[in-house]
Image 1 (cartoon, rainbow, N blue to C red):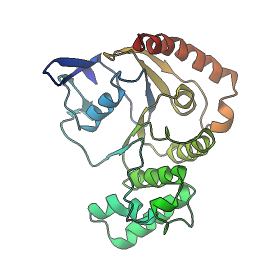
Image 2 (image 1 turned 45 degrees about the vertical axis):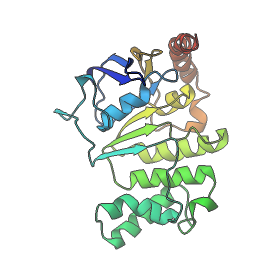
Image 3 (image 1 turned 120 degrees about the horizontal axis):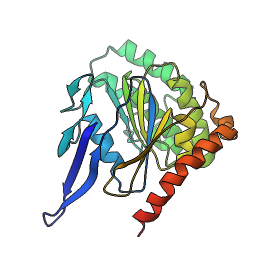
Image 4 (image 1 turned 180 degrees about the horizontal axis):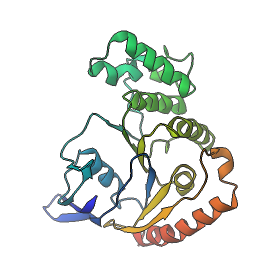
Length: 254
């Protein structure tokens, strides 16, 4: 992102600045989390990277080209699963592949493989209404991964899960990601999640969102998500980033 600013127009035509001169680079294969108070522009930044929103000023560049529209090699996963209730888990995973014209046999094979990876072996014929929230999010994750994206954008994908389920799904996700070569940009309000999963954590200020800090998470990989939180190194990084984030959360509430 090169010196990006973005305004939304309010109901009476007044401009609202949500992202203010945001600049950062993400090398290929890196896992970066964006954290900050509600309303600071994190999701807007993600949407600009996805090509869904055009920046008012500045530009977003990927592989040397300005991003002007969505690309087929980008996966985007939201906080809500967005599954089609009339399609089984298996058919939901296949949806993107079907739209791209992938042959039925290959679609079935890839869906089977990914449902196994996310811990849903045997649930392919179940419909969303028959699955728990955690299971639906796993189906949504498998659907996103089925397209084999080079860049994965994640907007609070596990926010709706209870603490125990979130921990399990985080562990499953990190096992899929490590060694995959995918670049991940992850938006979350959960700083512990950001530190446990990421290579870097970027803290945004209260609106208008500016980058307040950009911290490296120096924890070895592969990581055991259940255990890494108890390491002294984790606590040190978490404390340092929280000192930056805490003031912005307070300022956003004034």
